[in-house]
Figure (tube, one colour):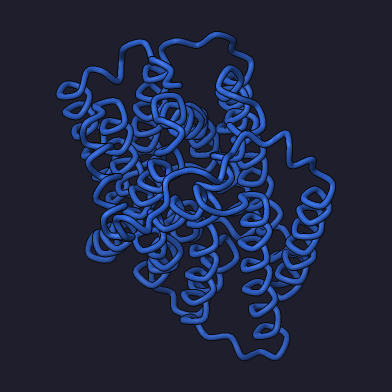
Length: 384
C-alpha cells in the first residue's frame, strides 16, 4: 500500500486521490466481512488462507506487469487495492479462528499477540523497505521484490498445510449449517448475538471508531511527508514503519503477559493512547519529533489489535466464533468511509488539520461508548 499511495501521489499530486487508495483497499470488508466469517466456520481454514494469499499474489504480479510495460494509471492502484482488500476480508476471520484451533482458550491471548507481532513486523519493515526500494530501484523494482516475497509466502503456506496433522485442529465441521435459515437468516442471527452481548458490542463500536477515525491517517502520510515535513520516499517509508515498530513492541509486551483477566482495559487503553498520539502527531512540525510520536501511536495499536480478536474469541461460543469475527471484519470496513472523509477534509483544509479533527472526534466518541457499555472494563468470562 505504501508503494501504491506514492504512485498515486506522483501521478496526480492529489491528497484526495491518494486517500481513495485506502478507500478501495477497505471497501471489500463491507461486503465480504461477514461472508469471510461464515466461510471460516464452514471450510478448511488452512486451505482458505492459501487461497487468500494466492489472490494477493495475482494482484501483485498484475501490478508488476503494468509497471514493467509502463502502462500504469492512477486508477490501477484502486483495482489492485480492492483485490488485496477482498483477500484480506476473507483471510482475517479464518486466520484468527485458526489460532484458537491450534492453541486452545488458555493460550489464545498469547497466540493472538504473537500473530499481531508477526503482522506488526511486516507493517514495520514493509513501508521502510518500500520507501527504500522506490528511492533505490524505482517503483517497478519495488513491486518485483514484493511479488517474490508474496510468492514465498504462498509456497510456505502450502508446505505447512501439507505437513500439518489435521488431528491437532479443534475446529469441527459439524457447526450449524446455513441451509435451515439461509445466508440472510444467518447474518441476522449473528447481528442479534453481537447486540445482546455488551462486551462484543463495545468491541465492535470501538473497532468502528478506530478504523473510521484513526487508521485513515496512514493514507495521508505520503502527503504529510512530502508537503509538510519536506522529505522524500525513503524517509516517508521510515515514517510509515514507525507505527509498526510501536505496535510490534506493544504486541510483544502483551504476549509476555500471563493469566490476563481484564482484557478490555488493555483494549480501551491502547485505543485511547493511539488516538491521543494521533492528535500529538498533528501538532508536530518536524520529522524528528513526528517519528517517535508514531512509535507511541503504534504501541497503542498493539494493545488494541491484540485484544480486539482475543476478547471476541474468549466470549463467543464455538458456533458463533467465526461469524462474530466476521462482524469485526465488517466493522473494520468502516475504514473506506474514513478514508473518504479524511481525504475530503484534507482537500478543503490541509492534511494535518484533517487528522487533528479525527483524533478529537475519536477520543470523544470512544469515551461515550465506554461510559454507555462499562462491561468492557470488567473481568472477561471465558465461554466454553
